[in-house]
Length: 545
Image (tube, rainbow, N blue to C red; front, side, top):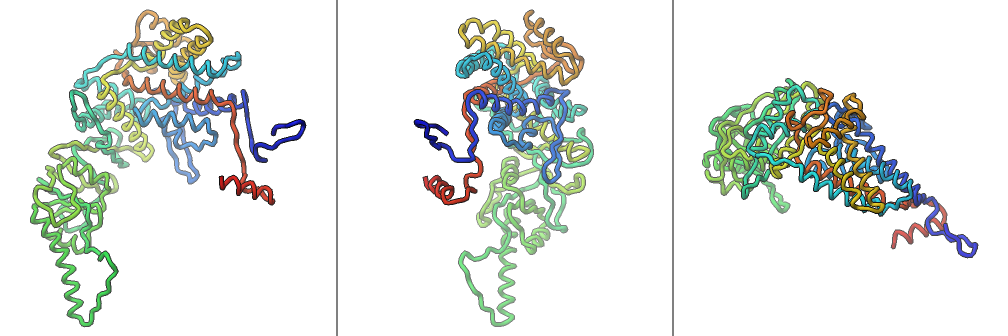
């Protein structure tokens, strides 16, 4: 509503809510901080879990930041922006999602204090940008190079990502499996590693314990052999991978076949049988003794395959078909007429095994295992799901470490180092940006503070001790949540890829600045449901524009 010479002028439609200036900023900052506070207690190895219950009553129990934020139903637009930070962090580096969100929340909290001192949001934004750029520079200076061939170091990196996610008692075992899996699928290009984590398949099965989780040097398919008469175990498997169905094709055009006597019907049925038998004969003639088919296999074709001693699996997922082809060296065939022995893949063993309650097909001993499977076991569905999440994190983290070759110590060590160095550097900025840079430095301390709080330690004592250690030049000293002391994280083996920290700082800073710069929130409610001629006309005009 505005007034012109005392006459009211209606600008926004009736029912529109508008918040401007400091109110809008305060509302957005509060919403973002609520999200950050929700996941803050899950940070670190001793972080607590969240139980998420959806409208159908399905339960997810996790302390994985991005999983929590994806599952919760959020209305406020600023809160949704914070959730996007976690998703970006997860997609880019796989771990550090909680760190990024908690940092964003703390940056906004510090910014609110500066806004109360009448410092303009754009000044704060500029100070934050400069501080973030300096923070990344400091992290790169303190980062350590690792030997990508050093399996023990890679295991420590994987163990750091897994710790605190329901799998501690099998920590060494799981970390070893992750490193072995990543090394198997890694490809060296110009002295650098390239890793496609999609080539590591994770299959879950309830039963046993987490310690029973194993790495299969090949592919595990969540299907069973289609016919009871087929062999369940084949050594020296010659594998045909088909995208086409082993069924009689329907004609492309609608056709009507008139049959006037039983002989014609018999010939028609015999012709169908012959077509199916010919398909199976072609597969057998090429030397295949195992068939994986993406589509259906006719009952009669199943009978002929069983008679020929061929193991067959149908309705295999597209992604699994591609992994089988990659691991065994098979060509994916769409036309059986052209099948030759050169199109077949090879594996030492293809076998149907019972895992838990269900049967699965194992393809092991592949020639070129550029695709492997982690078979996750656990006592309950929730445990298996959480172990799968921790393995996904660990795979991405090891991949990031191998690709970049740089790591930093964990346990809040890099954050406290960045905080101290930024406080030394901030006065060089001068002006009000200095206050923003100092606020950024203080915000970095929230990570070691949260680690201490979540472990039942005194955060003030821990922070004082950490600062003293870092001022003495002990750059890798952080919080050991298990002993409750400040120790050398490199010695303890708590290591994280550099990219996790740089990505978290970049994402958190960008979203904090974006939220800070909003000074007007306009929300229209129920415009379409307006009744009366004026409301209807207004709605129509808007929709046409």
